[in-house]
Amino acid sequence: MSSSNVPLNEVPEPLAKKLPRYPTVPAVLIGWLGRHTDFQGLGLGTALLFDAVKMVITAPIGSHAIFADAIDDKAADFYASFGFLPLIHRPYTFYLPTATAAGLL
Image (cartoon, rainbow, N blue to C red; front, side):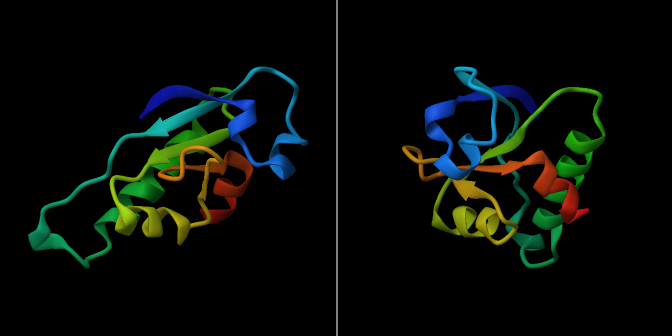
């Protein structure tokens, strides 16, 4: 995971209206999650994602959202299944507000 940000104009309007009018939104970027194909279907990707979400939610940092870059359509579907939404001009970059992420735990 790493500190990140996104231009406010990349965030969909309903969410952007709720944010301060700063040029960027503070966020945490989750690096690509991966596991060996021998372990496919065992829920390891979900476990890794939930662990990352838990670390962001409990960290003493200010972050509005969690971001993840999908490598392909399958990864995009994975993030979308947990409520992550694509950015306006970057459909393979997904975000989830930290308040929403806290509800996943």
